View: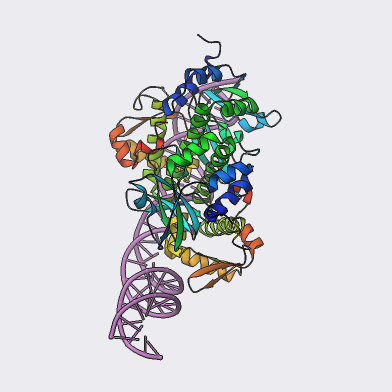
Length: 240
Length: 240
DNA sequence: CGTAGGTTTGACTGATCTCAAGTTTGGTGG
DNA sequence: CCACCAAACTTGAGATCAGTCAAACCTACG
């Protein structure tokens, strides 16, 4: 085993979506990094102002979000272990969104210029990272459709389907076998609804028999019907 | 002047946002292409199924859009001359959205593999194209905030501000000096509203004195106030 | 001069929000 | 082990923003 198996999940994700050579993988594993552990609700951006570092999510869950003037918060995406949380920072000085953990999480920080230089010298890695940002964009597009065109119940179902599909792709188990980590307010911020209304819709989904709510978590029980209710077709994820 | 000044606007946009060398620009101008002219409402994807080509918008306006199951259409972005309409196609076989002209338009089609090969051999161009897709993603993020968190009037104002800012950046004149080309239904599809409600909100913006409506077009008269009403801060455009 | 596409307006409906009061849960300190 | 607390979840009643339906009105264009 390598010392740097920290990057194993990220490598697995990039390899799944692009074709990396053995040398690319070795180079990623040789990247310098530091580890940190974060509590739920930890603001990741706060930690990277001084020394620009790029953040890999090793364990736990996180989200990107952004605020409107009136204070409303829009969650832009959820993230699972193996995701790189701030890739646009590779090419831009300033990011236009914030990143926050939604559970306890383990993070690896890599100096941005090191990663940038590696991407420049390794075309296959460059392409893999570019594809990663393109998949992010595809997810944003689908979320736009979700928030702009679907009713509350469909929106929430779609969100849960996507998250379950991505967890499964990340190797966290089968989509109908694990609890989803986000609370109702986070679901609300991601769908453009209020937590009160999310609560009512979850009750309906429960009554429909497609989810099971145990204390603070949601668990999908009938994935196939959930896909139908949520107007969900995983093609746009391109395997992410 | 070059024979291929077709790419002038695209080159200008890419140079504005990234640093291209003279050789990169020459290489772009040497790309093979064919020109076509499209009517308003022309479905661009229809034309590229057989021979995969990448589409540059030379003149006129276009939008990307995507449908939900119930038939609702979400416009994902508007495009101005100089924009490349389907860059994700450079790395993915399938696109997950459609592209349509919203006015009469002039298009240049470049064989995708030619452009792909050029990007691979020219790092600066590769980076410029990557940045272009990252700016697209930044715009999607802002639209998510717009549709998910802002009320109808603010949403519409924000949309108009962004479009005006991008037209100005593309060299089409000053933002408070030209008519916006989209109709009320297109504004509705872009903001997740109905055209009836868009109509009422435009009337209010008119009454507020920030826009002027002449027959079929909208014209911004008080840009500064419009920015405030629309909660608009152009930073996320990164100069696009 | 008729037609089609886009705009405008009014009356009514309804999905979602707001406000406000409980309830449950998990953690913490005594 | 229990008592307490904060955070999250639940529920109800009433308000509102935006949607629906339907009709009329432009205006460009053939």
